[in-house]
Length: 283
Image (cartoon, rainbow, N blue to C red):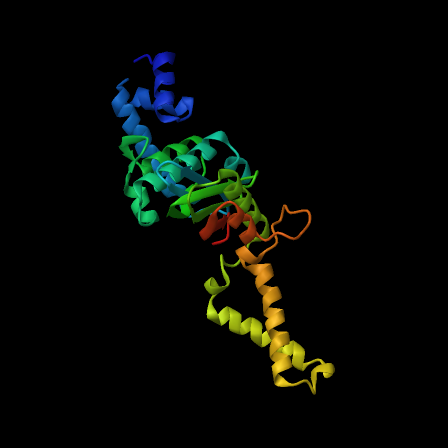
């Protein structure tokens, strides 16, 4: 039977599949639109299975924040090539999944893929990803995500490879300050929010390193133990200032005198937690 261009375009709009795939699906299904949709979904699942073993070292970080509901999420979506990671279709998929995670609260990636997709309850998240795979012809998969509640800020680096979601406490959110702190976290990559959040074994290791450095210097040979301890405390203080968020000098402060903790305090905010993702960190 003859397949009209209008039907092909309608099916493409419904599925985002390539035009020739839509035409072939309609021809195989006798022009039945619903059957053609299912045919393409099955085909897209086959494509996912066929490409499932390919490396997905490229990708994008996406965030979603609802200031009114005080919910947000960050997700890392992987693909095979940098050009695909920059396409509008892939970016939209990443943003859609971030919103889905924030609102639907999946416990893990496996559960996420099985959930009914937020934008269309007739399909699962796996189906939604399958449509993008069918269109862009690359394997795609969510690698990890996190969901936070409270006063939230977020930032995505211009190339999409690094993103931050920040949770704070306070009377109200200062969107600009929270975004600025997220920019800082993106650039400076702190280890923890506060000193007490740094694992004890990490602190012990830093102290051990400082002690070894002092012991190796002949000038310290006859120094009293209490003086040595104060020197070690000074070295640890410097290390904390370089690695702990609230102690770090705010990256945009030209005078190099204001810490991130002071910046947040001036806005009536206390940082609670942050999540910083960089594409490919799990490879």
